[in-house]
Amino acid sequence: MNTSTSDERMLLADIETLREQFTQTQDLYREVCAAMFFRYGMTPTANKLYQLVRKGSMSAPAEALNRFWQDLREKSRVKIEHPDLPEALKQATAAMAVSLWSTALEQSQESLSTYRAETAEQLIAANAAKEMAELEMQVMLKSQESLTSELTAAKASIQEREHEVTTLQVRNESLDIQLASSKSEIAQYQSRLQVATQEFTLELEKQRQTSLLAEERFRVAEKRALMEVDRERLQSGKLQKELDLVRSSMVQAQDSHQKEMLALQEQTGNLRQDVGSLQGQLFALTEIRDSTMKELLMERGRMETVQSMLITGKTEMEQLQKQLQQSREAIENLKVELANERASRENEKQMLLQNKHQMKEGDVD
Image 1 (cartoon, one colour):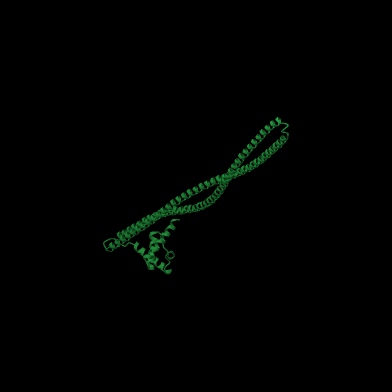
Image 2: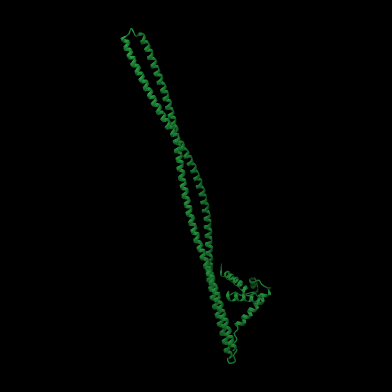
C-alpha cells in the first residue's frame, strides 16, 4: 500500500460523508473539488469528479469545476482600494497579502503531506501486523485441528486398548476360576490318593499280620507235627494246603493293591501335567496383560502430551487474538487522530477564510 492509494481511500470516505451533508449535485461537486485540492493536494478534473461522485450528467462536474476555479481565483486576488493610498502601496500590500496566503497554504500543504505520510506508514504497519496476526491465527487453528484429530485418534486407540484389557481381564478371571477348580480337583485327588494309600498300607499291614499269624501257626503246627509225626501226617498235609492258600491269597491281594497304586499314580501324573499346562497358560496371559498395561500407559502418556500441546496452542492463539485486538485498537486510534487532524485543518481553513474576508471588508471600508 502506497500513499496515493491511502489518500484515495480517505478521499472516498470523505465523499461518502459529504453525500450525507450536501444533497444538491452542484454543492456536492463543489465540496469534492475543495477536498481534493485543499486536503489531498490533487488537481480536480471533470472525469475524475464524475468517477468519484457519479451523480448527475457529465456537464454537472464540468460546471462545478469551472465555478470552483473561478471562486478560487476571486478569493486569491487581493484588491486594496483606498483613495488615500498611493497606487504603488496598494500593489505592494496586495502582493504581500498574496505572498502570505501562498506561504501559509504551502506550509499547510507540507504539514498535511507529512502527516499523511506518517499516518500512511502507521496504517501500513498496523495492517501488516493485522495480516501477520491473522496468518498466525490461521496456522494455530490448523494446528489445533490437527492436534484435535490426533487426540481423537489417541482416545479411540485407548478405548480399543481398554476394551482389549477388559477382555483379557475377563479371560484371566475365567482362567483363574478354572485354575482354582483344577487346584480343588487336584486337592481332592491328592486327598483320595492319601486315603487310598493309607487304606492300602492298612490292608498290607493286615495281610502281613495275617501272614505272620499264618507263619506262626505253621511253625506251631510244624512243631506239633514234628512232635506228633505219626499222628499228624494227615493233618500236616491239610495245614500245608491251607498255608499255600493263605500265601496265594496274600500274593493276589498284594498284586491287586499294587495295580491300584499304579493307577492312582498315573492319575496323579496326568493331573500334575494338567496343572502345569494351566500354569503355563496363566503365565502367558499374565505376560500379555502386563504388555497391554504398558502399552496403555504409553498411550495415556501420548494423550497427556497431546493435551498439553493443545493447551499451549490455545494459549498462543489467545495471545494472537489479543495482539489482533491491540492492532485493531491502534487502527481505530489512528482513524480518530486522522479525523481530529482533518477537523483541525478545517478550522485553520475557516480561520484563513475569515481572515481573508476581514481583510477584504477592511479594504472596502
